[in-house]
Each structure stands twice: as structure tokens, then as C-alpha cells.
Length: 88
Image (cartoon, rainbow, N blue to C red; front, top):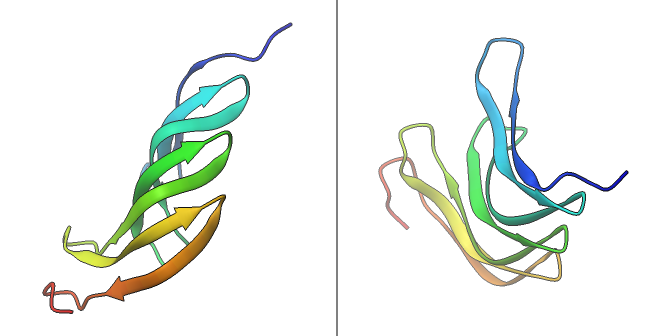
């Protein structure tokens, strides 16, 4: 049997979205949204199962909490962090 290529969504016990994204050949690929351990959404792309390119973390109010670049699954360069009102 092959690995399914499809959009997946994951929900917590309270019915809140934990993650949504696409799997190709069993690995994360393309755009994803994931809730981190602090309850904030992280939005960006996966390539071959690793975070790649620009990612953004959002406060619960939708404002940007942080943004930066992933390279080969690792944070790289300077990441900008913002308060809940969007100030750097």
C-alpha cells in the first residue's frame, strides 16, 4: 500500500484546530498551520517533511508574534518578535 496524498487536520479534545496541512508520500508538504505549545498558530511551508522558507507565529488576536526563515528545518537568521499589538 502506498502513502496517502491528502489534506489532514488535527483537533484537540475541546474541538480546537491543532494543525492543518498536506501530506505527500507520507510527509508534510506545502502550506501548514500548526498550534504550538503556547497555543499560538505557526504558519508556513514544509518541503520533504521539514519547515522551509518564511514562517509566521500569530498571537490569538491574529497579530504577528514572530516571523523569520527556516532552512532545512532549522530557524536561521534573525527572527523578529512583536507584542500583542503588533509592535516590534
